[in-house]
Picture 1 (tube, rainbow, N blue to C red):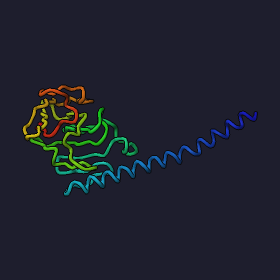
Picture 2 (tube, rainbow, N blue to C red):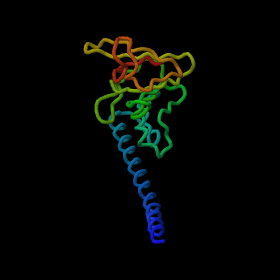
Picture 3 (cartoon, one colour):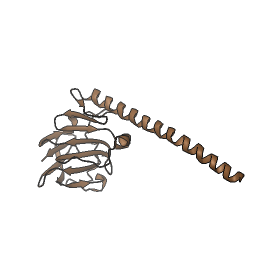
Picture 4 (cartoon, rainbow, N blue to C red):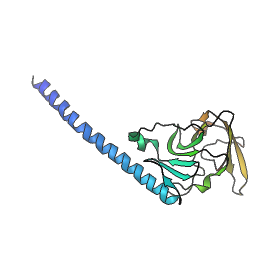
Length: 183
């Protein structure tokens, strides 16, 4: 009987501790997300906060904080809104996300990274969730400013880890993207 009493006591203590730990974890995630959003807003003049995890950098361009930091807000990894082209800094649709919906040239140097620098050479996975028939084209830039074609991505297509995708100019696509012709 002593054994079951000890076991029961341990379970009761475990149950009492778990909610406190979960609350601390949720508070830490919210604080990290808030700090990330604050850095994004500060680094991108003219941007505006849309919600707890998203900042509109300019019309048609939204940056989101890493998915793991917004788990408490119900965001799922790999979520890309219909009619958007979404880029992630991590493989398998994780990390910071940049969502683009305007057709035309997008120069990633125009969007400041929350921890310094800009979005050039940061993309490791993507989803093209634009309308049927839309193709986006991706480019790298060499040290002379010449555009080097990485390749296309058709609508409803995705690339989970650009390290495994061969670029038209050789090598992989991973962390090479500088300019995008959206649509």
